[in-house]
Image (cartoon, rainbow, N blue to C red):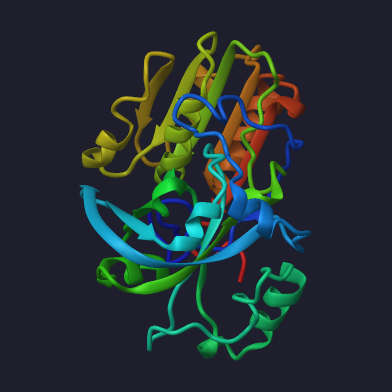
Length: 316
């Protein structure tokens, strides 16, 4: 895989939604490894209308773990993470990477409550590019609000993009900011594309390395009646361990770089109840075209999201 726009472990580019699927809570939230949110006295006391579904969470790098040759797991810790909503599945979050001096530019992100993006993002865009913190989109690999921790698995690609470069060098104790769902807002569905129907028996997941954390989370959320296929494009066979065990209801089929579209054509069923596609934008678009135009899958059954674009950033 080439191009400096390639994401790491979620997206190493601004992830621009290509489709949205309602606001129903994902199957399995509150069960099967996705803990239900709770509200204690402190939460009730601080509950107030918040201008955005997400909040900014100051965090510290607490642990580093190499989980395969090209995947690094970073554990982030912060007291504010007790308010991080544990919805799981393909929840998008943003890492606000530190500046070269380790700091955060002033654009209002840490105001309390966190401002709406129409405020802080506008102020961020107005800064000179060299003075902006880099923003990159990921999916948490694990969420532990009770411990004030989340894990993020970062795909380390070559050549490095900003997030991979930062992650390789990041050391325990470094600080940054994460934006993500705030449990004090209740369930909103914001930043989640995996929202299957209440009842479904079959599914198709199509992904590359950047969407593996989401695929693993989705596998944890599956109801006992659902079975399906996960087509995962992986460039280095040594990274296959990241999808080695997704449970008995997921038939994992690893394909080499450039084989995803043909694999979808060969293995997808026109009768699939729900399909979810994420990864390189061009591959996602081509795979969706196969499902909808060639196989006749109703478009409302297909959720899709381009995480990155070959050769450059998805959004500048």
